[in-house]
Image 1 (cartoon, rainbow, N blue to C red):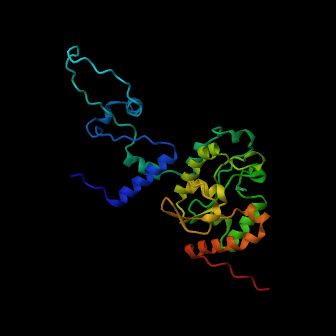
Image 2: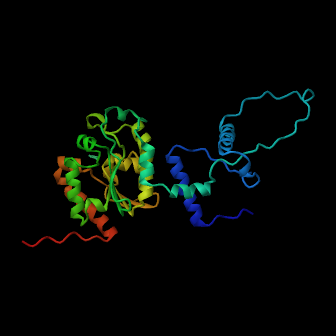
Length: 288
Ligand code: URA
């Protein structure tokens, strides 16, 4: 009978596999020979290359082979494929990813040219705030002011977001603010699916590293990206949802509120739910 892994470890592995899937890594294989092969004999490059080849062989469709005529073929000895260890095992990888930091993520992004948004940007807008924040706000993508300063939400919509944060009894430095895409889309258009697909793995890593209690998605792009849904934001705005075991609330984008001030009351109700979850009190009004 197969022994079951402890539930906590199973959950950790499931979470990690989902993370790899989000990064586009979908092929995994189990290394049955890891314990039989001494790692010391081969340099790591050789181990990696052979394991990649083995993985590719598993991934490739098998060529069609004509059935041999029975009499013409000598008996064939079956050779078990040797799958050699490749870098860290899944267990080591869990720890390695647990070592991730905002600095490493920023370094991995580098002077990014992975999608077409790089062509028009001045500054990459990585994110800003506390690396240990309980609350992360996720916007859509930088606008002109953010592109010029390299900081998220510093334009008109940003000023409104700052007021919202302060109304919750917090300061900007207490929370973390970032976007789905890190470069400004031209004419402030919404980021396109290929741009979101390229950039969002870095957002997922940022959230994983910060490990907040609550994620607030500002607007449909952030909500759709994290929840992987095409449903309109009005269908789930203000409800508690799950993102990889963390609480997520989607609300309207501050830029939408600038155009539709009547919706501010709805957003304030959403933020009050967030405050209750985080045990926050609104700041006391200064007496005159
Ligand atoms: N709008 C966003 O979605 N993000 C910013 O950083 C600024 C405006």
